[in-house]
Image 1 (tube, rainbow, N blue to C red):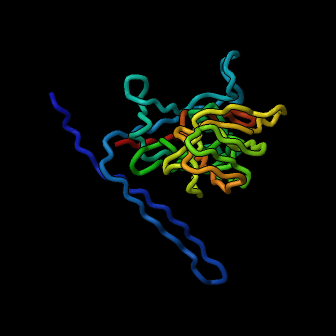
Image 2 (cartoon, rainbow, N blue to C red):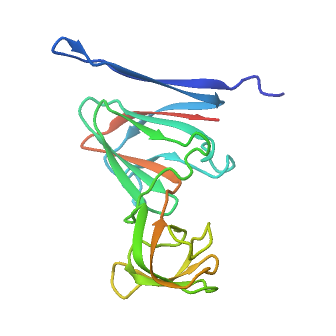
Image 3 (tube, rainbow, N blue to C red):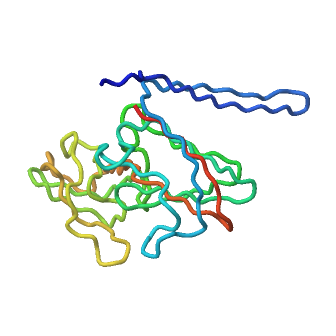
Length: 240
C-alpha cells in the first residue's frame, strides 16, 4: 500500500543564554528545513581504537554516504541535517571526515559537546567539504596559453589538480577546467608544470594571471575514535 507518512518541516533552534555584569547577552536562531521524510537517531558506543585489524581508519564508521539507497540508508543528495553529540562527561572523541577523493580531516568533539555538519539545502552532502593540502582558491601569474591548443604551461604549482576550474582571464572559454595533468614535476611536492584544459585556449599569452578554483568535495563517511575510554555518542540524521 502507499506510504501513510507525510513530509514535515524540521525546526532547529540554536540558543545561547548568558548574563554578565547584570546584562543579558542571549542569542537565538531558528532554522527550518522543509520536506523532511526520513529521520534516524542512534546511540553508538565509540571504542578507543579500530575494531578490525585490517581497518586503515582509526575508530569505527558511524556514518556512510552513498549515491543511492540501493547501497546504504543515507543518500548523499538527500541528507539535509547531521548532528553528533558526545554524551560522555569526561572523554572526547575524534571525528574523521572522509571526502570522495580519499582525503581526511579530523575534528575533536569534547565531552558534552555537539558537532553539526552543514549540508547543502539543495544537494545534501555533495560539494560540502575540502580535506586536502590544496587551497580552495589558488592564484598563479605564470600561466602560458596558446590559441587553439589545450596544453597549458606554468611554473611549478602544487595546488593545481584535475577538476580545478579556471577564471580571471579571457585566454580560455568560460567553463574551462583542468582535464588532466601532463607533468607533476620532479620533487615530492607534486608540483604541476603542464596540464590539459577540457577545451582549447582562445588566445595566446605568457604569464597570464589565472585563478584556479579547486572547490569542494562530497562527504563520503565519518569515523569516530574515543580518547582513553569508550564513549557514547548520539547521531541524528534527517533526509528529504
